[in-house]
Amino acid sequence: MKQLNSEQLRSLYLEFFKNHGHSVIQSASLIPENDPTVLFTTAGMHPLVPYLLGEKHPEGTRLTDVQKCVRTGDIDEVGDNSHCTFFEMLGNWSLGDYFKKEAISWSYEFLTSEKYLGIPVEKLAVSVFAGDETAPRDEESAAIWEGCGIPKDAIFFLPRANNWWGPAGITGPCGPDTEMFIDTGKPKCCDTCSPACDCGKYLEIWNDVFMQYFKNAEGGFEPLKQKNVDTGMGLERTLCILTGKNSVYETDLFTAARAKIEELTGKSYGESAEVTKAFRIILDHMRTATFMLGDRKGITPSNVDQGYVLRRIIRRAVRFGRQIDLPEGSLGEISSCYIEKYATVYPELVENREKILTELKKEEDKFSKTLKSGLKEFERTISRLQGTVIDGVTAFRLYDTFGFPVEITEELAKEKGLTVDTEGFKACFAEHQAKSAAGSEQRFKCGLADNQEGTTRLHTATHLLHAALRKILSPDCAQRGSNITPERLRFDFNFGRPMTKEEISAVEDYVNEAIAANVPVDLAEMTVEEAKAQGAIGLFESKYGEKVKVYTIGTYSKEICGGPHASNTGELGKFVITKEQSSSSGVRRIKAELRYE
Image (cartoon, rainbow, N blue to C red; front, side, top):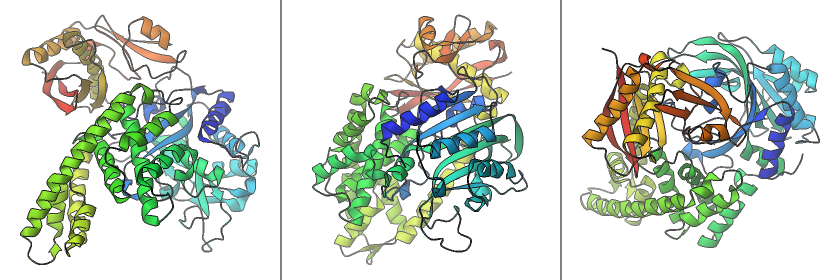
């Protein structure tokens, strides 16, 4: 196997698929555009959902990229060898172009060719979908793998839990997949040992998804208009496998930050299980926080949505930093290591360096105050305590109301000769999560992937709203996030104060004037340079020379966007702003709807 660093692996992957007719596209933002089903971009396919559903992509039907992703569902698992909240996904797509034969053959070539990864065939194992009531057994993929050179005894048929991908949110494109594994050479744990086992014999390296279905809001599966291929190879895990490291945290991605923590704490990574876990959590969380703060759609810590997740991981990093004597105010030094490491690949981190470091310092200071208030409440709590056990409800109140981590409650309790009812705390926490999940299911019940009429009309309305804010408030107003359902839109934008009633009314009037004008919504494909020259607004995340879609709405709006949209403003109904509020520091939030009376 080739010994590659992160820069080499990214370049090699993109070069391979470029040579196979794929257009190299830029990584999208970590903040999904107009999709309320998830808070962050969780997979490489996520920004491409409209195109997987049949919309034409300006760069063609074969695409490849390295996508920034964040997944926080298993945040408590971070600290082991492989879990990361932020990661990079190497991917290639066919949008109704090639299908299983080409995808599998190219995967095999990239994995085994000496020019690329050079993995010996005998070290590979693959799994394919075993079939169920939704889709048939995937004999076709198995036959292609065997034709490439994978022996029959290294091809495993596994159920939906193992070989079905998606959708990324509650609804969306999905389908059976085939996964590739490295056989570590460990003996089988049992007669039925397979890549489905957690025994460590098989390590996943790549996944080819054959998107043939769309999961609707009712939980049913419908055939997609076009058959797509979506592949994903985790950069961190692949690096770990190629270099023979025991953990992703030992790859070159973390070298500088790891050395910085050692310098700041006087501790050594690997000196004990507890120290190593703390190192890994800080390394992961600070990398994730750096990318969240440095994203071009720029989020900041808050008590809602993406900002809440950001706040949680920063504070978790601070808490574990305390365990290894990380000096207060050191997060910026660790973050700077990542800014330098990724400067060439993700220049937005360099562009937003000041914001990243400032927000980290502010949040660290706020958490120090939180800890102080929590300490006061802890002292009040134990002064009233009868017995030697802090009950779970009280421990959860310290956590939920005062932001006081239960681990610190346990540490302080131990110093006082007390214990904490951790099982009671976990029960309260589980109840809290269940309520939050129920609320999220209602709130995120559908997304732009649904292509519903109400969603596309509101998506068009966001363009008019964006233009109105720039005209009435300031030309510097820019989108910082958007969340759309068929019933309402939510639009975040940078602005330093609450809007006045007169300003809100003026914005509504501008949008409704455009609606009353009954103008067409025109689409044109052009290069980034051409879009800029025409005065289109957008984040311009694409590379120069790359084509983008520009939607023009009369003289009212011209904006880069992936779509879809209404065909005419006259379809939109009456635009009404229902709420204007703060989203986070320097960011305002508008909620609005279209009424048809």
